[in-house]
Amino acid sequence: MKVEFGKVANTGNPQKYNQPITQENRQVAFGNKYASADIGKKIDSFMPYSVKMAKKLSSGLGEVQNTMINAIGTGLIAPIFIKFNPLSKSDEDTRTYAAWRQPISAVLTVLTNVYLTVKPFDKVMENAYNKGRFGDNYNRTAFQDEKFLAREIKKQHPDYSEAQIDNAVKAKVKQQKEKLLNDIRNNETIEISKANKSGLFKIDKEIFKNAVNGAIENLIDGEKTERKRLTDEKNVYRVRRREFYRTNNQKTLEYVSEMENILGENDLKKVKSALKDKIKGLKGKDLAELKLITEEVLDIARGNIPTSDQGDFIEVMKDKIQKVKATAIKYGPDKMADKTAVETAVKQELADRIAAIDKNLAFYEKIQTEIKNGKTVKEIEAMFSTEVKNNKRLAKKGIIFAQRVADMFKQQIKGSMKCHKQIGGVILGLIAAPFSCELLNIAYPIFMDKFFPNLSNKKAKANNKLVEQAPAKGKEVNNG
Image 1 (tube, rainbow, N blue to C red):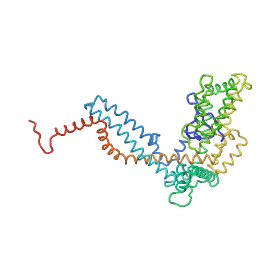
Image 2: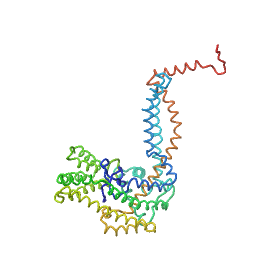
Image 3: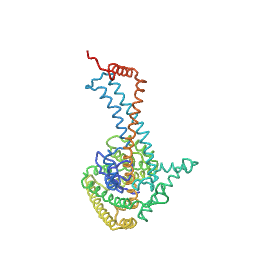
């Protein structure tokens, strides 16, 4: 994997980084993958109409997160306003009794909505997507989820140990990746299976077309974003780091060696832990730049990363360190006499990079035209193979166009699935609401009787008094 750094990273996927670096936002990314914002917009444009509408209604959070946030508001904030409401004419005990209803309601909401409806619903839906029970936009049979594969293999081989299941899952994932690339490259399609139907089926042509177009458009958008960053960004931070390399060259190279040893572990959990320890130990202004570099490397692999992808992330982290090493050598005191020399070199470096970007952009736009004219993925890859011989920037990116199409296809399907589940989650929540309310009506008096009998008795007496004072139905009231 070859990558190019100098952009801010998102977390969770090494395919989505492409934002500008600032002093406040110093994460690292790599230019041979997609811009997260750009890919999001591109995928949105390929979504079915129903999915687009669902996404507009969504706030960006999942059903579980929304439920939790609402529960916090209900359980912690609402009781304060009920208890201390100066406009309420109720006595303090009545307000306290009513206030306690809110946290009980919040707990029951979480239990019913999350653990009894959302999580089981998500599991059912994920199972359906992996088996191809819905339309092509929601069919992930070409790249099934590892957890789903593990369950299926365990059903087929109940005698397998955990290690055997893990190996079988890895083998299946590898097989699916190879088939997906082969289909894209050699057959101009993607084959999927469908529940209760035998054989394989070609994915809808429009979905495949969107994946191909999206792949090249994101390459173009990524280069445009990088060019804009280089032309708009102040050079002060770039000069500062390279001046640090010049004045602290030996220290930087020794630190790079330490980082190489850490990354040689090839265990992402251990690597992240070691990097965090390094950051804690880098104190003082003279070590601030090394601390920033370490944070940038760590930021590449923040968040929960699937086991199957961890090796890729470590490789990207290694590439980052090699980039630091190469730059430190280039800006060493034997090559740069003073800060003025550093500033001059940085200026030339930027000019060279912009020229290289322009060359790439011209090539990508040519590819885009050829795709519109009907060239296949295999023919496009042949064009890439020819271009890299005379294009250093493109060669460093190590682009495999069929893989780009596969990644775009996966993102499209996952995006559709997410919105599809949100639609179902809203419907399920409406169905579950009456049951939640009824459960609250049953559970709340029991809870209050158990833990707050004084409040509960006072409330009951107050209710009885109101009943005694009310006139009997059908009888006249003697007003004296």
